[in-house]
Image 1 (cartoon, rainbow, N blue to C red):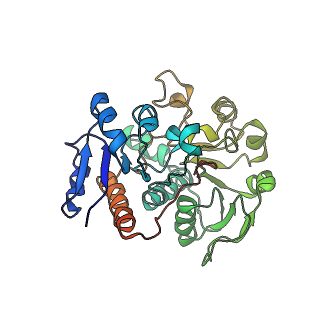
Image 2: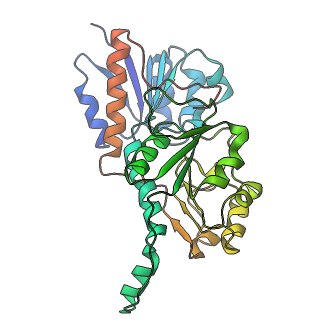
Image 3: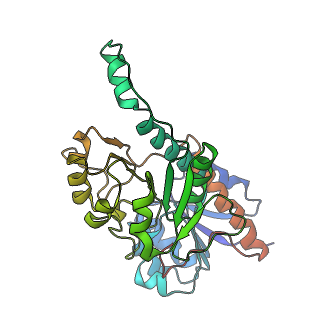
Length: 322
């Protein structure tokens, strides 16, 4: 069987790309990022594996890729490569959606416990050799509100429910997904403030689209309980950071756990670094030791489907952006 010619936009020495050797011969793989190499290979490629996290290589290459029949992104976020030309093309795009849901779900629950159990104070007391009685909270019975009830949102909700939290969620289509017995109630987008007012912990797990930009701004922060915590594991563009900093400084919400930001890397002078009610991580909540290997295995699963003529998994709605 003649296998498709594959252009892989990545470093040939990367450990995760060694998994591509599992493709049976006669495989036709061409791996690299050098501009001359990419320009030479793009017109011949039938499959393109995008291994980057922005469009710096893919976007100028795309007009040359006239034989492309399928594009796969190792990242779940694809906003960086959705140029008007690519969106308008009939070529399907698939991504790593769901691959990182388990790791991000664990992180979401860790963020809940970080605030409920007052971990920062415990650490400060330990470092100061100070024995101080303190009060911690139970999370059992509290409300976990999820905005964006996709793979990450559902996995986070499953773990939250497992420790006794009540789960509510907001979806673009306000119906429960098939076989979902976790969410107690599904809200429509126009009911966002109602969900916020009812939640003790709010998880943002939305993609980057025009509709989700600053979905959490000053009005939404005012709608939250002053004891509530915001957790953002989706995209930094979903939060108006200036409004969030103001709300955190004034203690209008209890705190925030943030893994994603409007500008990355977050500048060292950014005020979020200095606030004592913020848990901040450098877009690394899903970076387990094998995260790239797991993303590559999703490509291999889809590659087999492509060769066999079967439906692809994780097809992106390019116009919707996810």
